[in-house]
Length: 292
Image (spheres, rainbow, N blue to C red):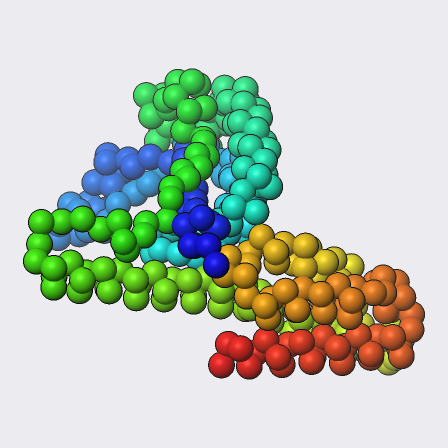
């Protein structure tokens, strides 16, 4: 089997945004004095330079990019670096490219409206308004960005240092142990995704009530319950960084057992609905046993 460093790489997503907020020292001191605070730094007043409603579109785009990054990669390090398979690389980079374009477009729209947002803030902030708090439009635009950093997975065998052989061996052993623990955690993340998706499917299919009686609240089967299984199954090959045979088998089961029927059919046919719920529960139990 090829080394992990040949089948995968590390991906870090760096994001930047403008909070649209600023500390107001004068108001902070006035509030502290009004409340007879013993110290001037008893509190800190932050004013919203631009209403958050104007920022939602661009910050929403940023959140969507972060979700895509997490969806297409697996956990690796505590600093937010994640592992990305070579088979998933092209899809990932294209996805991030499109998200970057969306963020740049949304940031451009925001900057275009900035003069109006500042005008609104002048009225909203009253005497707290200070035009010097606002950066120029170009500076604001540059604060919104995403950047992907791709790095190789370090190999324990690459460790070099002027130490005794015993010390080097101990360090290499520790590096290998930590790497193996990260790989295990990454694969557990995949199995947890399957457990979450199938568990949610079982819950929805079992609870579905097509007829509302006595004003009882109806439990629906949303299309996304089915389509999320399809999306996950399509993604599994690129997440299987260890070529785990269990995942190969599970992917086939998801496709053959759980997405055979459309949401409309599952809502209309109790027999097929119960049959699919049984299959989903069987997969859920199997995956849960891998995680326990």
